[in-house]
Image (cartoon, rainbow, N blue to C red; front, side, top):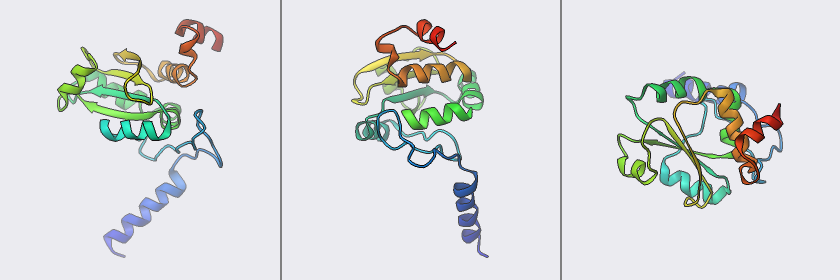
Length: 167
């Protein structure tokens, strides 16, 4: 068996057996088919591709600003962004965009990024900013924030009220 054939076999095995499933006919909160979480985690896109995808799907953007040298960016990547519920929620309800601030300082300046990591939630139009989230966030808290934003409860209540109601 050639290396390529072995790779394809392992790849297909990973997709069919190991990948999390969204369930037959699963639908995101915006009415679009839910995207299954890829085996590798969150389906990160570059800024321009993510903006186009958000407009196409109607889902808001989750823009993660980070840098290689950032200790808490690495912690977020290693702990929060691998949490299965976080991965599922992000891939289902948002278009995930990653911006390396070392490589794209102009974009970071446009979003007034002053510390890392910083996450911005932006409407599907790519212009209307919902809110930003500076600093490291653990997985349980991040799951609550994702629910708060995706449910659009931020339009009618503050986050504390939202979390109090969830108890």
